[in-house]
Length: 470
Image 1 (cartoon, rainbow, N blue to C red):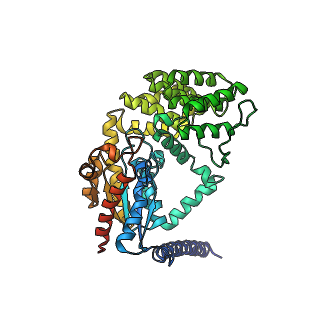
Image 2 (image 1 turned 90 degrees about the horizontal axis):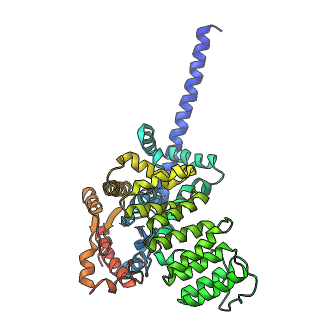
Image 3 (image 1 turned 30 degrees about the horizontal axis):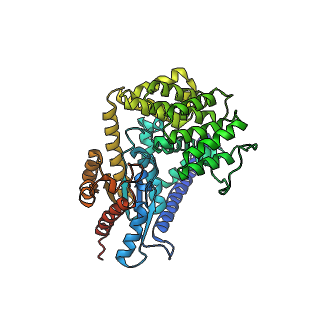
């Protein structure tokens, strides 16, 4: 065989391999797209023909009353006289606009809605976190990645690579878990801080164990929460003090006593109780003790001591999102957000904290300048991204204000993208004599009547967008 003949055969084989690879990619792309079309238009026969996706924070989730998404589904089906609407509530307490924009694509693919309702922005002032890693979204390769995401094959390979790099997808989403942890704790009112949420605990009933027995780690906590749910705070204090008389070195029991005391605004006693807890040998619950101690000091008007307490908690658990978020919120209230970045000098392990990484990125983008401007520009950018994502899925979009507050950035983005914007402020002023008539007991979120008004207005807009006559 001559050299020329060998070279020609090699080129033919290479050409065949490249051609075969191209055909395989095209066939795979066509297959993924065909599957997407099938799933889009072939719904189960018993599923409602119209789907409404509600995205947002605790106002969408429904803290304080029967949520507006739940009431919206009932209203829409009543108005059309049949089971025609399915309303999906994707509200998450503590969510900000960046987190919503990051998650929206997946929710749209999951639910395939006809209309998307978005209510968010209130948490941006204290929660600057996004789920997408900011270190991977900028620069040349970030732009290339976003372009390639138009390919179903590329998306499949990218998702699969997560599974290849991590033992489980749950492990791969550790950043999400930190963000969720921070959001859920920071949405609690100060008086709720310190309550342990016990998953899967069996209800022990009303009969309380005497304080003279030796306790397991969970049963007294269940009893403490039962007392607090009943509003029997003094009884809770007496019970937990009896428990601690038997087991004085149990950090968890100290935190439960502190929660009972904090509910009664007995802050000096709260601080004394938690100080004892934090001086005990460190255990997992010690992080919670430092977290509570910081909040008690914050409520007493001692912000520097509060930061010091939360910092000690971070030394024990540098990845704790709620501790870092508490510190950042403390500094935001004093107009000194960037001071939170100085924590890394004290705790080098903060390099792995998702919230710290994002704050570093925010600082790099805005040069340590005006935080309010950074938040405003981020909100506007997020709202535009939400609108464009909804449009790519052929879903009509409704943005809204809160009952008593609106963000110009959201309204302007809605106008720019041709989306509907509902301003609830005049509607609530007209419908109620005052905030006490539509606010729940936390004086922040709506009660069921407030959410009802929101559901009624959203129902009008949904029927208009879908051009349905009732």
